[in-house]
Image 1 (cartoon, rainbow, N blue to C red):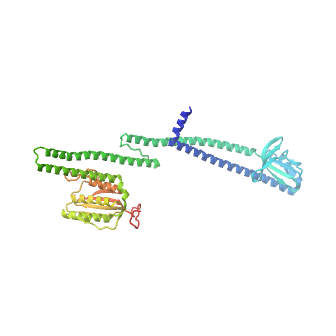
Image 2: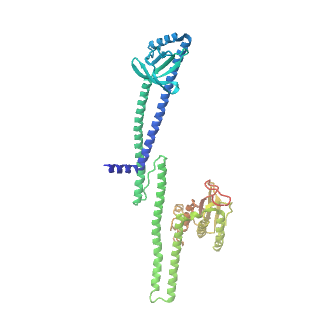
Image 3: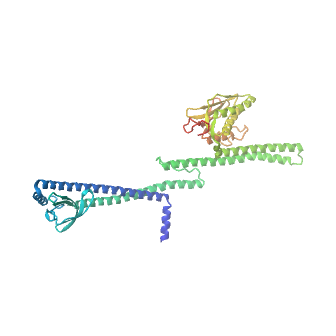
Length: 472
């Protein structure tokens, strides 16, 4: 019997919803108890203060009577007060001489007392053979007599009973409300967490399109669900990319491998001359080198997407990087009979890897020269959104606007007759993503304008440039 209870308790305590509910309920109950205790002591203190003021005022009034009329006048005033039946059952008076002989009053004996706060004495008042707890003050008069003035605690006891009953009812109500709130809180928490668990199980089972519903409440769970959905979008995109890459690799490998195999088989024929064998071997080597280049680009792309190169990021002069690439390709443009123009720019600093940024810029220039009729124009500037841009425009045929989103995906080639593997712009997109930037296309009329957008240091507000030029 004990072991099942222990297992049940352990299972409940291991639940974060149970622990949060328990701690919330305990905190709420303790807070309620502290608040009620504070209210109780405040009310009781106010009642005792009021009682002291009443007793002290009565005693001072009697002392004034003694000063004006003497002992006889005081005895007459006491007898009149206890016989008027106005609160006489609660009020207590006793006047004794120096030898403690009773002279007047409505109590039978000296009250047993112990001092309490505010100058009051608390003790038992004997009256009519009954003993009642009460508060009183002792006044020593000029003739040696002692005046005791007090009140019993029946009124305070009644108020105390009512207060304690109210506190008990408040505690019970608070516990019920706390338990109800804790139950609702636990149900809500289990529902929100359970929804996340259900979606993650479905995703683990292969349903990558599943997403967590987003509520209208802008709470922490909504933000968490949005982050998880963003992560799932990224995972789905990567998995689709892997499938696409796998299919494309299989397709791209099949043709060259088939050609290599066919040529080598022909070369192994007995009728093949040595010269034909050399030609077949050279063609096979060329195909294999092309495959080697393909795999090299794929490995480089995988390294970029993995984020390994982010460790080498420093603050870089983007305009200097573009200028170096421009100088390298100027001769290439001249050989092709085309112009390559670089418009001047102010110094622009960006965080990043200089080699990767140069590679991205080179890819776009190569692409522009490949499709340009007469030339390519390069502009480096910071736009009004604080983004450092490298805009490369050509005057070629351009591409349809409907293809802008597809351009830059792996192995995608708009024109299959053009040589290449379709990884150049894909690597540019990956480099931009690594640098927290993006690649966008626009119609140059005529031609195509490709823009690399990067966060500029000292402009975006998130990054600042140090004196040494390093990323701060």
